[in-house]
Figure 1 (cartoon, one colour):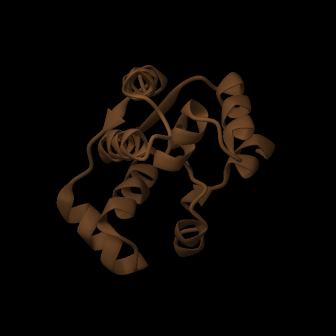
Figure 2 (cartoon, rainbow, N blue to C red):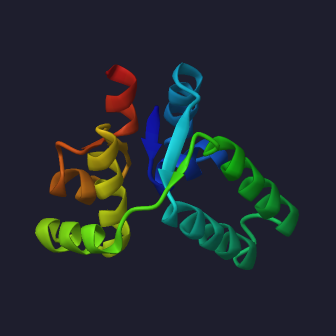
Length: 134
């Protein structure tokens, strides 16, 4: 099972510098899950991409459908109090803390390309490359 944050899922769906690694990781383990806020974040990114003409509306809706398929392994909800505690303890946003709580609860490392988040919680996180090497 892969616990992916927003940027890992986005990289699987939309070509960028991490897409090759995200797709290779998916080929190795297609059971991806995330914290529920990731779908909100992805939807926001797709909307911004449409507004800035980096994708069409059709592409945005297709990408959202792809996200829902990619994350069919599960969308987790973490307790708000746990997210707040994690945010305060690790000095990260409440959004990022939600992913860290999910990692702790699942007993797996969060796959993220957010270097600041990886520095804040190295025992709970890994990059796409680290996940591939594991």
